[in-house]
Length: 284
Image (cartoon, rainbow, N blue to C red; front, top):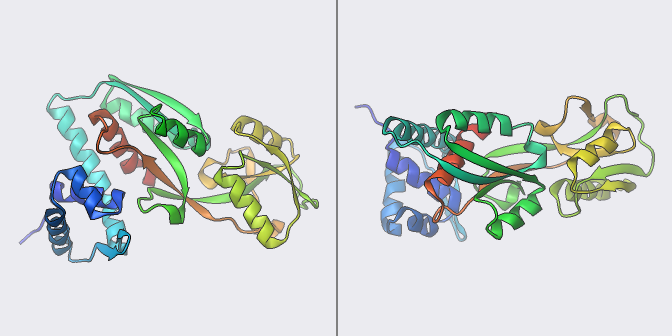
């Protein structure tokens, strides 16, 4: 007998994955923790694989759970979009969305264009800034949701993993002077912290030639050949080059992208756009 993935089970599973705890997820879906636990057991029986591992701090996804989550997000987004369109319930209104500067060119056009095709009456106000500024604005109520960068070990619900890379001018030097000249974001940003940590561990001398929240200013310094920078690989402009390990630079960590929103109080429009991001971002 053929089996199928129930939308209600997938939605509950996505909430568990997002919250990292059955108790918090139960509040979001309006069920008891015991009922939600039974749902997760039923879903595991359907797919024939363990999906969750319980720890003292909550639950974490197994390898099979991570794989199912990717499919679940796509299925839920397609389901909700189809239901909204066919029932005449196309969304409208205004949404305030925060996106890190370095992802504006890489991801925003595809996200906004495809959502506008589904919901042409929606107006999305985009705020681009460094992640710490977006988090602060979101927590003050100035954004409905935000796409932010986090260390990989800081979150469970990572939508996309990105490598941090060293970047220099295309025609710049290949033999970097000592001390190394850096152009970095603000001191509280992941690129700044990762660069200094990696260089300190490697015992490499450096000097910060430029540190600012202005991505345009940072890129201008790099294009001039006066310094090198750290960017996420997907955000490297075509006129800059990723510096190979042969340049004598230490390896950098990967970071993750997550969506920040209050599921319990988010509007249908906010939830719909968050689902759209979750379905598209991993494959962009």
